[in-house]
Length: 306
Image (cartoon, rainbow, N blue to C red; front, side, top):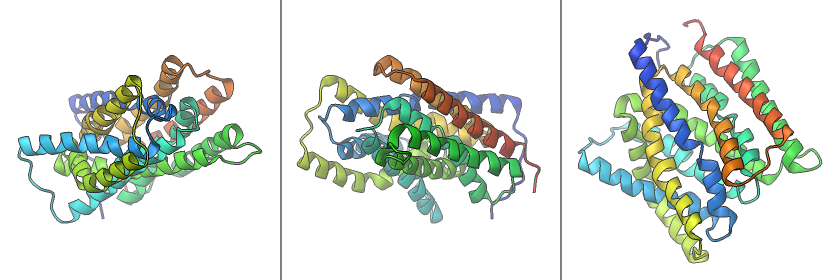
């Protein structure tokens, strides 16, 4: 059982954690629009984009780990890295790649805005914490707001579209990867955590990439290849350097609140890069989900020690 006793962070360290977290969020905010660009034209299959980006990042990770002679993870750390890999290396990229073949980037950003609340819930369960009742109420309200928005906008007839189910699955996967990654980053280091997770998943992701290329030979445009390159180098690798560094420096509950900015940035990028129209339902739905997620994260950070 993890201790819930918390050591107050020094002001300088707290600011450092927030700065690193903000840098990571800025990098991640372009992930959904660039995924939409990569899969939207049909030149690359969702499987190729979702798995191939991990192969690029794994190659960079292997070089970084070898060059710096990092020690191998031990024992149960490999299993914990498997959770990180399953969530942020395989689950989120693959599920969002398939979802964004039909869903717009702005719509997806609103559903994914639930991620901070999900991350906080999974971190609470992982650490066996006892947050106040307000935490569970607002987290549940955020889930209802996200699902309600998705059903009203994407499913037709009040039901969820298949792409929305994929996005919700991606949120659960990423939340698990973020929560576990933030904890193990304190043991292995920030960039080492995502690097080992990438290396661990490399054989599977390379096999999936090969299968995808064999079934559908990539014929993308230069812009689509550039978007794919960003996903592999920044979204899957460099962005996690900053994000896990911020979570490791902490305080984790406070740094995780920065993630609330991400859907706002993503919707802005979708309008600027994809020329998507920002509708009132998107704005209202996004604000509702962000407000609930933010309240949940703040109520958790304000909990009394167990």
